[in-house]
Image (cartoon, rainbow over all chains, first blue to last red; front, top):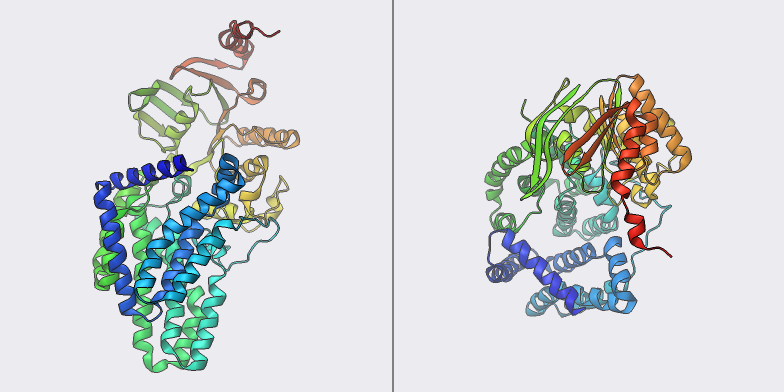
Length: 308
Length: 226
């Protein structure tokens, strides 16, 4: 187990170095970033504690893939595997638990601790016969795969919308809408295998515009019930609703373009810093989008062979 | 036609392909053979444009990659995408309208199940179906017969022969010489990053004998089996 974590530590250090940063500085930046982002979150919304819990659970679930579970089980055995998963989950959640405790959210911190332990011992199971239907079958894949991985979020978001409308809590309904945006940002965060870019018969700008348009269309489908309720019950707030929707859309576009700007590598600290800064100051998105678009076009020229 | 002139490729200081010159004609099937690490997959990746290289690769229809059906020896599938969605994705990427996926499912795959849960052979058959439905002009099939059941191998052989009839260019790599000698018009032997032999059908037998002599040597004796 010790060797496993030593190796993970080396991998993380290599990733930080690949971003051109000395690992120690990378860790310091990580801590500062965590403090800034959570401070901002708690400053901006009353639902920050729930966003933190949901975000951490989402992060932990990334480590709970079938391949990883199989590898750990085959290499270390069942008992050791559970210990490793437990330590991994705690390493992820403890910094956020400290933030929650510092903010006086003791119940949420406790829930996060329990979830970290429960998810560590939960075994990945696949149901071969059950395919979750999606409205995106004709246009795979980001939203098709993402929706299936996070399908449980949508009943929660739609239920929150109904509750918000019933109790007259506008902010709760807005939170539900932003939750859908937040979840869909994750659909585009990891780079796909090169084959899935190579297959496209498009020039880089067309390829990117298609990705942006697909994101636009698909996020609208997912947000449609919430938007409808918002605009019907809170029609006087239509300016705020449209503005927040547009900001969510711009974030989604930024993530997509940032991904292809460094493709086939994963987004790293520089992208993380710029995107975090745009959370603090959303107008920055208006500069980031054209910047990442241009960078992506140049980067994709090789992959899509746009030499003609 | 695909023409390769002076193709070389290195990974760091390791030279994987050295001065490869080849010409592939329409309506022909070419077999690429060689030991593991001989450079077969790298050659395919260079033709597909997935690797940088020195030299020149041209084709009569450009860009080549937009008309190329590429089968990797170990195709990757997204975790939660069905067989039907995979085919749809590949056809969308090449702007091919496809409405009758079910009726063209010649390998009887469970298209409404997640592709990642398919067996190795089923995954290969799905990847093959998708590139055939893309209506490509060129095909690169890296180990297409590996892991596929004998019945499907028979179907696949017939499909490849049909592609030849349709004037397509097909490049195949296989570790099983007999499968290549049955269907290929020419076989290219790669060894130590270079083309060691390039022979036509009439010389396949002597190539096989030569390969056996090179590969086997006295290895079996060295093992000292008792």
